[in-house]
Image 1: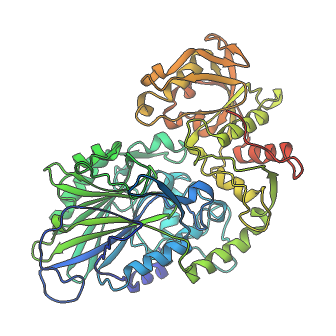
Image 2: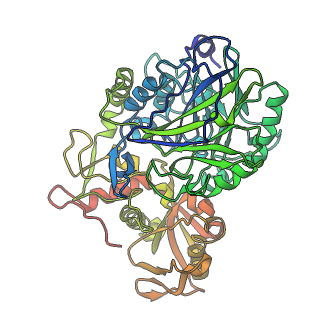
Image 3: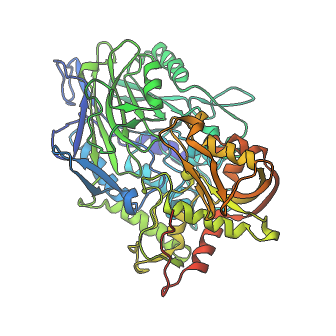
Length: 595
């Protein structure tokens, strides 16, 4: 670690204190009923209890600029059941929100639950997310757990983001400046080296302010190898989330730290997409399902709060711990659109959190507040470096083409991307593909008609295309039998994907029926699967285009690893931009493809 980073950590100012949670419009409050206690509300002194403010967020994904389209909106539900969408997010506003929230709070700590980087828009992704780490340092992030996307570029790159140094291949991005790394510790308690068995990063850290000590344990989902390229997790082992948290909670207790927060990059699905939905109705945790509900039930009651992520959902729930005591479990959606403000009442005598004093609320990072000047300067500086690449027009669209925000199993932008991949890999000397399949998780945004800069409405820039497909996966064409194709379709809705289906996006000419009234693999109506109107022959070998992530069995599609005759082509981003250029113009903009 550079000496300068060590010095910064020693002198870094930690604004701190009590969380003041007002019951105002735009605030979701889910709290364990507060009990009476003699708290000093953050003022120095010798009272027995003190309220510690925990500010948290998750799944930022390098969204320094306000995310476009539906990706940059949150939903508020009114008492009459009507909903309202609000534009939110952008680090200029996130910084302002966090700084305002800290005012007057002596005891305050800011934490994140993974995926700060990875799958980032071009402004951050082009520079291997150095701009985002710099922004998080300035925002005042104290600690972060790793998420699956922290491993997109492998263990060595994650270590560089932590410790600093210029990129091993592309060098330093600014003359005379060496990247200094993260001021905050990244925690990876459940990620170990296959050979040594030791964690690849710190498993926990202890936050101290005066006589207050709170331990933080960071874990990512055990299934990270299923959703990250094989190269990114090479030589690493990922362990059970609850077992790992319990292990280090015991270690912290032996060190005298009885107040513990777990940062878990795994989440749940609330029954409503509205950020102010009460997921504790009719009882604690009744309105949320998914992996975190099970994990929370297994994590020791030594842990006082869970900050979660991964599912990009918003919730502030109380899920009972193994002893039956309600415990706060939160998630702040994604892309910096929300932040969570949690009050942890710390008992100085027992050195533990008073559970009856824990309350939590999600707040909207609104765009009608002042921008943080230092964040504006940071964005402008990196934009100047990126501009020659980012602002280049690559195509034209007639209207919004929904991707991640479509809300349907088949995404218009997903079909467009699959068509682009088929066209790139169809020539006989380019793989001879007959159809293409695209994983929905690889589509990170919508294509918005409204201009993001000075390019004009309907113009798609390279930066916008990069935001949609930031992974730069290489395309492949492989041989799959008809039976293997059918197996792949069934794996969308069964096995590891049954609880949360991953519906592959398909190229034109490939059709089938998905019957959602059925369950598991039976949802695929076998005799409905056709290519160009002809039933799929289980014995015939088909040439299928897909990205390397899918070809490696990613997202639970193990059957793709059985493919034969692999041909590697250009990147998915190259195919996407080439397709936009070939099929659109200012006079004839591209319309969304029909499902």
